[in-house]
Length: 132
Image 1 (cartoon, one colour):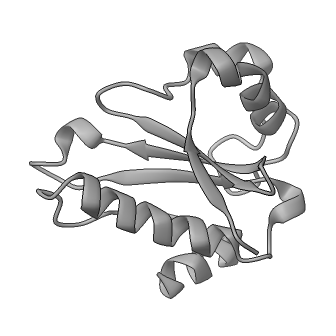
Image 2 (cartoon, rainbow, N blue to C red):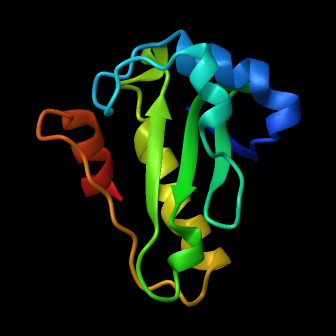
Image 3 (cartoon, one colour):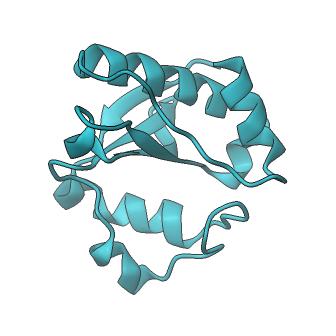
């Protein structure tokens, strides 16, 4: 399955962000659900954060948030990766993780490492990280 990546545009994509983030379940994140009213308080684009869709056949199937970008020269980038429930276990998380690594190292030559944390029971993310 080939996936494409596209930067999130908050003004254009707010409805899609709500659909993906608020009407799906996120069992391995700090909060399993996100309320619609919380979308506006989430950071998607700033000097410290960049966000990207990953898409299959032109339809968003997940979201990448690159975090701690303003601190790259003194530390490491982190990321938040969310795959829609209907596309989990299909390898898109592994492809997205590989894209994240390539994108960060090509966009930020001063970067020397990327950090990733996941829960002990998030086997899918562990596999994606090991495959990267």
